Image (cartoon, rainbow, N blue to C red; front, side):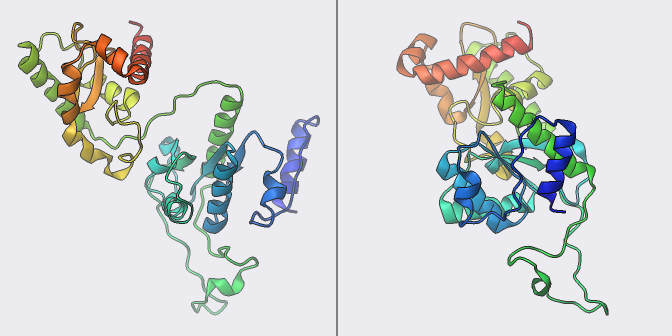
Length: 312
């Protein structure tokens, strides 16, 4: 029985009143209109064939449809490593790496697609493909549909099920207009937060003559850098530095006060690049509000989150 029909029967047994349109259809250019017409509220991509996956994601972007994509769950066993982030932030996953490359090369799409992926490195590779007598054979000779793989990666069944549960949670939350702040993928190690904390202390001593007004410790620096600013400058809204190379940016980042009249607390620190600090500290907040109202409002919103999280 096709999976689509099997799932329809299963869902109908749980909730008989639901309406399910199950289609045993392969997605490609000829079926795009049939599958994606009708302006669906959400498209969930669970395809593991690269050509088909890339074509579907590109079509969703072109049609301005909300889409959530799952990457490889095979050869993984750690449920605590599952994350939801932009396509550019997905790491340690060969499938998402290939999808990123193809979307950028073939369609000029560099990001903006949320992905469910695992930070865990795959523990296995594709199983070898051997004939009845043990000799190596060409998997392509056994494909039922051109382009689809015959060999498989070993799968621990509960991990792809968890991917599905994560996808369901994200979709339901978004349809209900419930804001979910997913954990950012920031490739800093513990030493980086110590460096940023020490850098803050030294800057305070240089600018203000004392570090007595530094009201954060390393753990709070970790929260500020990771949760509030996602490991990049408050002025950098592009995702070009996100991903594997993100750790390098710690060499050009530092924490400084947002409002110079207030102490360096968890709700008054912004992450900036070295070359942005002097300009920031030469202006008052009123000047920033007047010159850059969008930036001012964005930073103020982020810092209000810190006030809420710490009940300040």
